[in-house]
Length: 167
Image (cartoon, rainbow, N blue to C red; front, side, top):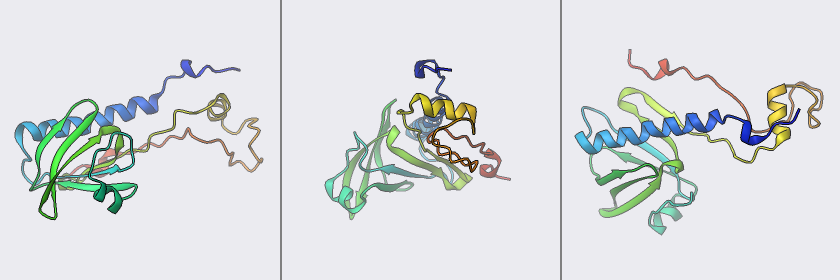
């Protein structure tokens, strides 16, 4: 059985794109109406992701990952299909940040117990990985027979959104 990667529907990418749309739409709502009630956002992003534009001293202080809070003091909030922009104050110095939506690893609004965590799958799956994932514990050459095959990449997890809803 040969599988052409172009013939595979990439549900992982579709879901990630849809969920990043929730982030974009949330920011658009705040741009239009401000933060209502107790809403506030914790946004964690990868500081070394291509297109992240932050001051060097922040990149040095937060290598790899940084969390910002949009609550009381922020300005120039903007978002498009690719990036979000915001000005925040660090030690009373306003700094403009540009963060690609794809760089965001966590988006949370603690006021309503809502959070999204992004763990994008790599695009470099080869045919053997796809076949192993589809066939389970089949004749994967990397399988040591223990039932815990070593195929990488494709995993699935069902997440209940009920845990994030207010009761």
